[in-house]
Amino acid sequence: MNPAPHHPPPNTLNSMLCMRGQGVVKGYAIGRAVVMGAATLEVAHYRIQPEAVQAECQRLKSALALARDELQGMVANLPDDAPREMGALLTVHSMLLDDPMLAQQTCELIIERHYNAEWALTTQGQILGEQFAIMEDAYLRERGADIRQVIERVLRVLSGSTVLLPRLSEAPADEALIVVARDISPADMLKLRGGRFAAFLTDLGGPTSHTAIVARSMNVLAVVGIGNVRSLVRDGDVLVVDGATGAVLVNPPQFALNEYLRRQAAYADDRAELSLLRDAEAITLDGVRVKLEANIELPEEAAMALEAGADGIGLFRSEFLFMGRSDLPGEQEQYEAYASVVQTMAGRPVTIRTLDIGADKTLDGDIAVAANPALGLRAIRYCLANPEIFGTQLRALLRASLHGKIRILIPMISHMHEVHAVRQAIAVAGAELEARRIPYASNYELGAMVEIPAIAIAIEPFIDSLDFLSIGTNDLIQYTLAIDRGDNDVAELYDPMHPAVLRLIAHTINAGERAGKPVAVCGEMAGDASVTRMLLGLGLKEFSMHPQQLLDVKKEVRLAHSNALRIKVASALNRAERIDLASLAG
Image (cartoon, rainbow, N blue to C red):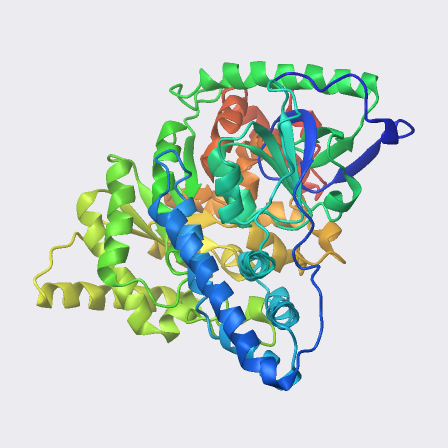
């Protein structure tokens, strides 16, 4: 990648601007800003005459239909090298255009308030956005972005504007470009595919936004949730993007530019060196074998895990098969999805988590906000309360187990009676398949997520009755510290290194060792190479993470001395001290 020109634009000679968001792909990018067009939500608002109401509703419906046809056309003509997730994301947006909450309610605003179509559409979008904003689950909160992106697409149709980016002909052909936008929809990402873009920067979004998901699949740097980057950056500004920290420098002085050019080159060398570890075993210096598995959200990502050298799938989040659709996936559809992952992994274990839906949004799209969604009818509680949905998934899992080693992972377990209820549900699912003379295997393993402190504290009966455990550090931290990391007012208190959290993790791992049962960590901590040695010191031998993080963690494992780390970490925990990660690096 060629460095940006040495001289910043004339209008920014006086100072450098530094901003920060959430980085979703590691690495460094240096290039010129290309700002996406003015936010399409900035539209004229005016009232129409009563006799024009029907015509205005028709104008809205025509725009919705045209936007839907455009999206469906993109799906039908996806290029072979498009990201695997793109078709599903475009289909979700196409389906949203038919949602009565969007079309009918917007038309009612035109009829009742005499709003013009653009005003009615943005008003309804604000109402829907507020409903999504109060949802507890971070993934579901960010689905509000889908509504916003769909509305912006329709507004673009209403205005007759299709221009996304300024003309790029004046930019040197060998110069890297960085897209700056309020947000980027999947359809817009598809249009940008193939350009010489080194990074994407957005005001909105989070680590599970579609911009983040597609950027990861394209392996293009992205920093999301910056806040106001689009309003502060102008076309041609020189940008430096640090994907690891989420830092963005605008028109840096030459000394800073030189430093990041050095870091960029060093990072490229480091990635080339890491790639040599793909087929190397993850063994510590003192001979402890460590399993490194992958977290995936869609069946197609199994190939990415295999390419990264994963020992298996440690977490397949099955709820992504259920999200963003007006119907439920049937048994056959689920079976084919699970079976495809098992077959792709070619004998390696595949851990599939059963449906982990929150209480703040039901699967049919109806909003049903609980008093406290994080403590309500979610995950296994939801599944046991909806035996038809749960039974369909269990039958599909049992059928898929014919093709290889499947581990069924139950989320949000807190009581032993839930374990017994799950086993009974599996027995019923098997009997139903037998009655239909559909073959299935019974060589599956059954495990539970450790994400509620209760199970970590009273771990013994759970470890005795289950085949394995997987620690979900994200929720375990949240429930232990009573901190919602999605709440900006208290997010700084979200502390993975809190001694209480580490003691719960250590207690669970130790119980697994005593019982001879495997214990994994599949939360974000598992993919953070800076805490790999600390987790080894807690006794962890199974990690599961995003495929892109696997080689970084493998490098740390191969440089570590497990027994020495266990002594250091145990000593710190016994004194209830915070663990100094730097002290574990030696």
